[in-house]
Image: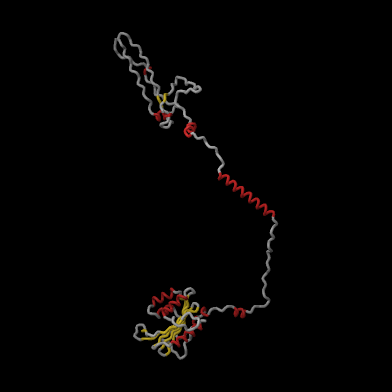
Length: 348
């Protein structure tokens, strides 16, 4: 007889890998590959004389699976054996566990882990306070409306008032104009407020010998620094100016009235007093200025000719008056005082 090996029967083939319950393919992938069952080796006949009986089939171990929904480290993650589909599931009896994957109830597991029963819902204090506030407003408004509705109505005042009355006599326009307040003299023509050139005097070069308007440029040219003086006049709120010049012998006189804005007159007066140095002696009662004469001579611009200087400065309202005297000998203080007083009185 031949010693050829016996071919394994179909019963010796390994069973297919078990699929987890539910038939979900992703379950096997999540749980990992099942352990492969190695089939038993074929049985070699002991003696060639007698034919070997077919080997008994090896029963493979039941496949092992892991629950894919179990948390790592929990009891549900332990491997378990899949039930045999040929066998009928045993009926669970009271108190007897059934073979198979352990079942876990999520809600039951949560209660078992916390061990704290859910509290009963109670009314919130904020809701109670809000309800009380709304109810109080409604009740208060209703009570107030009821009180106001029960009061008698207040009578309204009459719509028609007394008509204006007019005097029967005809108003005299001249008398009304005479009774009205007079405008200030400094608000009119400044040329009418400038002193007239005294008789027996002569004109001083090209300077006006009758009261005339003076521009800010002409005022600036009278000083040694015309550019700076021009800027100072415009900065100080200069409005207009009028003046007159004359000459009596070798003595020269100049009278100038300068008007500024209401907010700049005080500063203009301070600068005029600083420029002319007229602040020592008052020439009239209640005057806010004064007059002064210099004891030392000065030189004319770009000349060696000398002169003595005297000046008077004062302010009435928004007008600043300036009187200047240039003489070859010391200026007569009495004559300067009298001239300044006359010009001050014309501004009243």
